[in-house]
Length: 315
Image 1 (cartoon, rainbow, N blue to C red):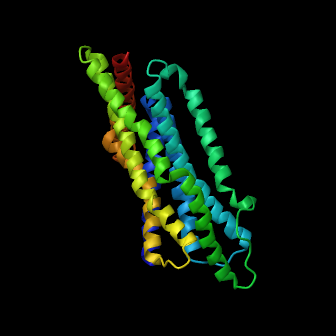
Image 2: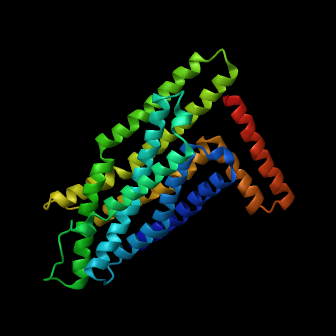
Image 3: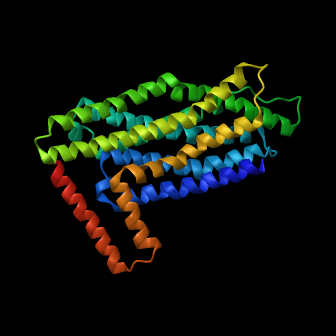
C-alpha cells in the first residue's frame, strides 16, 4: 500500500507540473491558440483535475477511511467524472482531426476558436453528467448488515463496477477503434496531400507540419489505449465473474497505469510538437533559469515573430 501511495503521489506531481506547463505554453504563445490547441488545452485542464483531485481521492479511498455512504458515493463519482473528462476531451481531439480530413478547405472557417470553446464546454457537461449517474440512483444501495469500514470498501468495489460500465461505453476496444480511424485517416490524408504539393515548397512545408501534428495526436491516442484498456477489463471481470480472483496488486498496478496517462501527454507534446517544445524551452529560460526581464521580452518577441513566419508559410 505504501508503494502504491508513493507512486500515486509521483504521478500526481508529474501530472500537475506537465499539464500546467501545457496550459502556460498555450497562454503565452499565440501560435498555440488555434482550435486544435484549445482542445489540447482543455485536455490538459482535465488532466490537472485528475492530478489535483482524482488521485488524492483515490488514495483516500484506498486507505478505507470511515465515511458516510453518500460521502463515499460522491468521492467515487468525482473520480469517475474527472477521469471520464480526459476520455471525452480526447474524443473531441479525434473529431477535430476527422473534420480536418473531411473539410480541408473549409476547416479554418468552420472549426473556429469559439466553436472549439463550445465543444470544450459540451465535453465538460457530458463528463459531469456521466460521472454523476451513480448519484442519480445507479448504485447498489447501503449495506446495513456490515460494519462501516467494510461497507465503504464494498461500495468502493461496486463503484468500480459502475465505473467499469461507463468506461466500457467510452473506451472499449471498438470505441477506441472508432476514435483511432479518423486520426489514422488524417495521417494518410496529409501524406497524400504532401506528395500532391511537392512542387510548391510552402504548401509542402505546411502539410508536413500538419502530418507531424496528426502523428503526434495518434501517439497520444495509442498511449491512452495502452493505459486505459486493462482497467475496464479487470473491473468487468471482477464485476461479472464472482469466482474469479484478482490480486489487489494487479488492480493497483492498472489503476496507476490509467492515472499515469494524464502525465504522458505533455511529454508527447514536448517531443513531437515543435511549437510546444520551443515554448517549453522559452518558459524554462525566462522563469526557471533566471533570464533577465529584458531577455524575457526578447523571447516573447521571437515567439511572435516565429508565429508570423509560420502563418505566412501556411498561406
